[in-house]
Length: 431
View 1: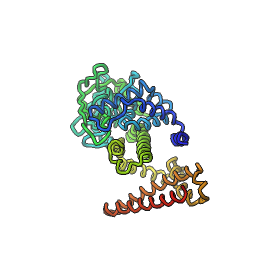
View 2: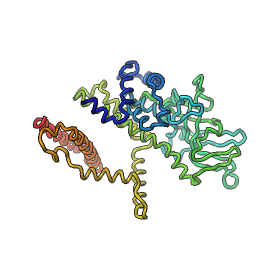
View 3: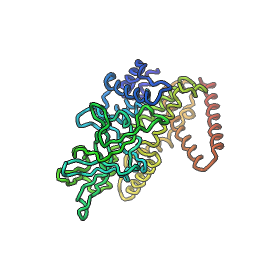
View 4: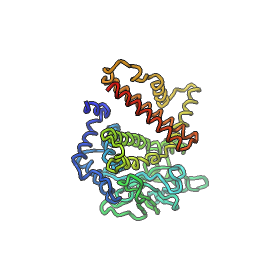
């Protein structure tokens, strides 16, 4: 029964995920201890990653190209061992290196003075037509790229977002700013692992969580790279310095460039689901009670590691504002004779299910037999999931109405007591 439930919940990628679980279960040397110094955690996470590739046979590049759904399922499972491994795995294989190396390529998109405001970044990539190179430069301390995964220790290449500057292409013969583009920049020697000239790297130090990931700060001082290192899907520069693009408008190019990072948001959602699965499994299996406060139960580590999921790859508040703005634009298009997008249809279907689906406990009150019915169990899980969403919405409304923390806590406590009483009543009567 348990195996069948696991297979159902993990769907078609169950086998791939279970292989990862079995691999880590058999390798105690790769399991993350409760207390681990930052440097040791960096080393362990790197060894975990290499073991996945070279011993467990995980091929992230191949999966990303052939079966993205399985790739994200593998990421979710890897997070069960250590969320730092999950993040490091995701950063490692975001771009395929030109030489088909197992490239370590962090994205460089967070700045000291600008946060994640990529459109206002100041790092420049100026084309030199004499040498056929781009010159990557960080103009000031505020433009230093911070919190770059894999940069502090293990990264050999970086995907750098920079403003593409073309000399003599602007009005009056001035330099032209062609907007944000991506460039592959080597940051360490492939053989010696030494930091390359013009590259400055600093470790971001110990963090609240995810200390297996070696986050660093990057600065570029007139670093030269070949013209071919421009990722040119949306814009290219010819040998004589001419710019071409299928998207003439700079704002559309910017949107398309950042659109390539959407896959990272999908990965974050998968990782979050993985964290929830681990936490629920521990809570249900152990019924921890007060012992859940012990570090060995991982709740604290899971919470701390997951905190950053609200801000990295885009702050959740800003992303929600973008989604709301996009939905309003689509709604406006509907009045002009357009059709609603997939997003609108998904929300519509979700709400119709929410409004029409009956509670399986009250709608099918047929006696003890139906409680053992698998269909009832599935319906109950779905209603419980909807209830959690309603509970979160209620908590949000309470907070936004400026009710004191004490009153909010009392409200939650009462609901929890009511839930426990209802559950106890059902337990006594039907189990």
